[in-house]
Each structure stands twice: as structure tokens, then as C-alpha cells.
Image: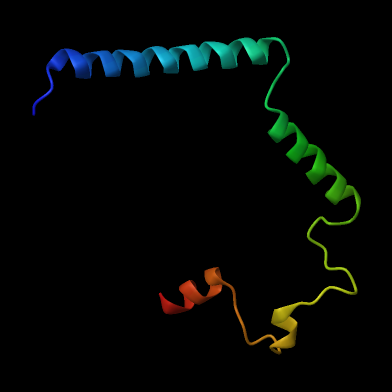
Length: 84
């Protein structure tokens, strides 16, 4: 059964209208200072971790698999470069 073009046209128009409404709502929220709460929480958490010394430096009690392997293991970048 083939649906008439008007059915498809209505679906596409509805999707477009919904997308436009979402963009308008996002713009209004950002203008009102009501941004993405999840991103704000993530940024706060990252700032706390960095303040606690989690900035990529290894702590004394952390396990490092590369050291355990005697330095024989390499990361993806090094292994790909060796193959080229």
C-alpha cells in the first residue's frame, strides 16, 4: 500500500516544526542563563577532581600496568607508529 505524498509531507513538516521549536527553546534558556545543568555539573566535578590532585599525576597508591609490564608495553599511538 502506497501512502499519499501528503502524509509524508505532513510528517516532514511536523519534524521541522519540532526542530525549530527545540532550537528556539534552547536559545531562550541560554539567554535566561538556564543552560545545560548536566554540563555544568560535569565541569564542577572536573574542577573538584583537578583540585584534589587528579590532574593526570599518578598518586603513590595507584597501580600502573605499564610499570608492572617492565615498560615493554606501548600505547596505541606508539604501536601504530611502529607499524608504519
